[in-house]
Length: 207
Length: 182
Image (tube, rainbow over all chains, first blue to last red; front, side):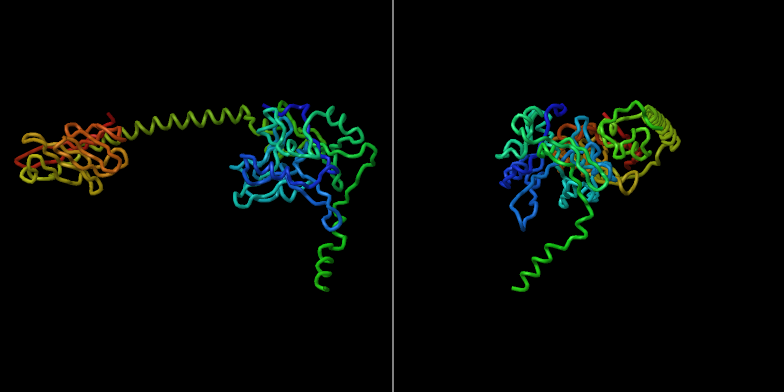
């Protein structure tokens, strides 16, 4: 049974309180026991406590699947990019390096890439994904577009992300302020920045 | 050739239609329905190859039958003299070659039978139990009848190969192995 088309996943990073409930709930799932498919990322740990939950965005043209040399990552008709097929995955890490959102992670012990598949075993049965059921601040929301618009009148979901010259459209929506200008992310800018980790290390040595 | 009739769920990264995409993108599709898609040509190839394999198998069986018939009767080999096998006794010999241990059994005065010693389950050597009139395989508790070698109990389902015997002038000769399925 496919995931119903009207049910959508929305991430609202501004509401994330970093409680790790989603990570715990995800790792309790029997299909990947002990390993979480959702990552909780710190935006800038030295300056802020803000965290962002990272689930698979389920791109319309998934880069992970594009770069897979073993044909292991497939997308089902309902737009869900499935995790790597175990018999096909060769643990080459191409998808891990290619994904612009940093979603796929390599399980080196199992030699298998494992990533969020929007709890396909649950959502295809009409249930909500694990992380969305436990999120106390509703930073992770699974429901219809009407529901999210009713409870977040000042936000609107976006499905397009620009990485350098590439625009990636996704199935999962990111909640952003309704009045906003198009963000442009210069992916190579980080190369010219001063290494922040290095500066902290030097301070520690001086003391 | 691009397949126009396929459904394309995924968007292409450059936004051009699926038919305009390079060949490798069609060979390694991202959508599951396309991944499971079998073209008529592939299906026909599969049918032809599999039926060819079955047909070749039949020819091979006929060829093997013809070869077996051409080989003719095996040579008579003396395995023992009658005095060596007392009534209720048994004797191991190798026939038709070194690697085929066989059992010569004499359940009564005028009966002599011989079977391959290899259990038809996993080739463990069977042990005669003359009192109960059966051959026992100790590996998995398989039992065979001494009268005709058919399986009585346990995992073996096929009877033991029977060695045809001839007695001439007080000597026992083996004359061929009878492989049986039932």
